[in-house]
Image (tube, rainbow, N blue to C red; front, top):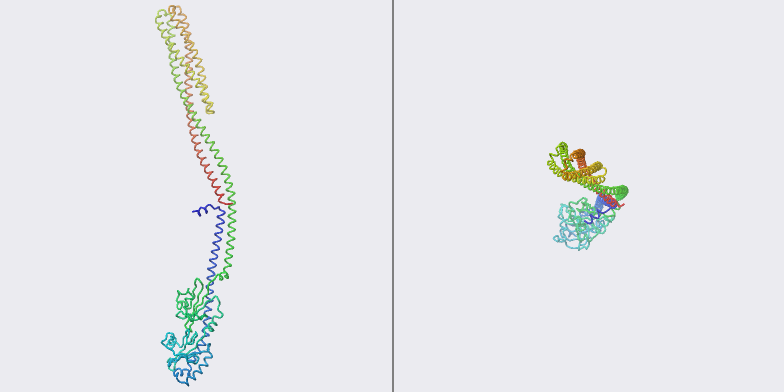
Length: 590
């Protein structure tokens, strides 16, 4: 896990260098492996060919030296004098004549020695002298029966003769009578020191060579101790222990881990020959493939250097591009933060403006309710006005009958006094409505100024309401004065009921003046009613505009919130891009 983290934390430069070194090491290993394999194949082919030729040469040298000795032995066994002696070993004349002839052959043998054993007396003679009596049943004398009873005219064996006290390569030939009967064994012993030294004389020191028989006993080497001990050839060449050396390896080539083996057959003696040459490091160094591997390694090194330089140049270009990207991402992130803050402020302002619009809408609703109440009151006043006009007409028409109707007039005066009190209350109510309307107009003007461009139409309405309030106040003052006068008149009429008749003229005159005042008040009330309807329509339009403006502000607020979320996402992405650019810059290692 730690190793994996270290690998991930490496920069691209370090990874490139590590990859280049790994690739170079792989190329070196592959080149070395191919060199070793190729060298080994060349070594196997060349060595096999060399050893096969050498095995044939050594076999010919061995057989060439041996054939002359065999020919002399066979010629000696076929001598008539020697045959007669072997048939009659007790014949002194035959013995003397035979020994003289054997002596002539003996000088031609390599060891200048000879031996014979007649089957008639089993006496073993060496160089013309009797040495011992041979016991055919003695296992140490196996060679005698093997030769005498064999199908071949001769055979070979290497052993130590304790009676002669030497170890030789013995050539054992059968001596036969004229009728072909085996009558004895004769031969010569070839000294191993001189004979095998000649065969091994020009042998390469790296090559190991042995001769062995079918029993796998070593029969040919310069080391006499191996011959005397009859060492198994597999003990000296362990890699061949798994092979049937006398069979499967006959005249064959075997390539093993240590080197190459070549075996062959020495037909003359029925032996086998094996040569071995080891594969060493010196063979690799001397191989022509080593230069090819060196060229391959140099080419790979040049390719890796070019690759590393190319990658490093790309990383430098990447660094510049990523640095520019990082700067752009930084600027974008800073800009996004500013836009985000601005949008957040706009959302807050829109929320505050929405609250203001709601309060204005509530105020307008209240004003509309007040105006509706005022309209109802004006309607009531208008009804009173109409009654007053009607009563005034009746007063004017019945002024002539005033005296008759004095009692009725007193009652009418009392009723009129009550109506006058009610009119005072109505006038006071109108005064209160006028004050509230004026205050509402002032507040509406203030809120319209706060609303800015969207509040201009509302400011016009507020101005109209203020003017209506001023006119209502002016009319209210006139109505109040008239009511005061009516009260005074009522009081005087009540106090001067006796002099009513005298005052009929004044009553008529006052009735006319009252009629005129009622007409003026009626006109003012009608104008106020029309203005109230206009204000009510304007308020309704204003409420609709405020409602639509509120919906627009709500939509604008939603759009700003969406914009804020998009800006937040863009800002996050810009920060991620900036962080990614930093990581890439750090990973380049340049």
